[in-house]
Length: 199
Image 1: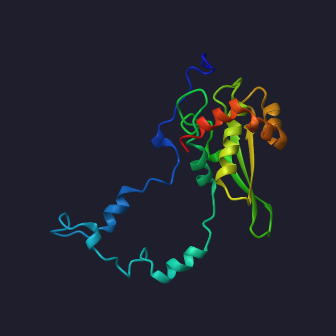
Image 2: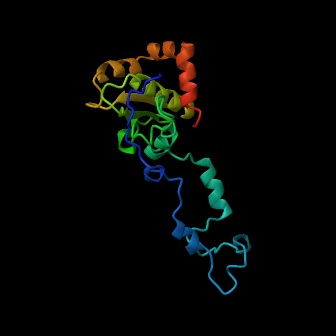
Image 3: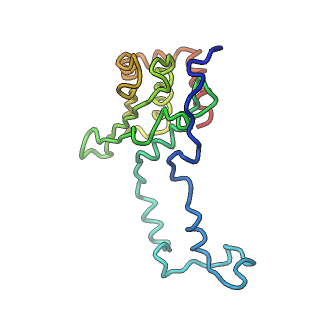
């Protein structure tokens, strides 16, 4: 890849990417008591207020340990947005190749326990004739299949109208035998490992 396919991609600032990893700074300020010596006393010296609704008792904590935290679209985005682009030293999230609105979770088999869910990710290549669209889609698929529990089915497709050969790429990404054969290719497996290093 000596010559760049898209030499001038649009890049999003990391602070513009949707994430629940950042906590609002006003929340931290409001939780600490204010007083004459409050700046000299460490936060750990304050005991939690049992009458504050955000305070949780030990019994509530033990109940919440048994519950499974549901996986949502934001968590899927957090898993795949840090995948490195195979051409540029940037992430798929910063290049807007993966976007939060293009991720959906739908129950595959309702009323099953555990509930089987299909994760659909629509990939938007940076240019309509990107030759690496299949590799990018494969990277997203591999990342999700490695990170998600077995009750999730992964469906990665090229977003309609964003690539000149989207139909062909979607057939390749949806064919389990082609995906398995591609993963056995040493060169391609090495490229995927490099893409997933930052995850």
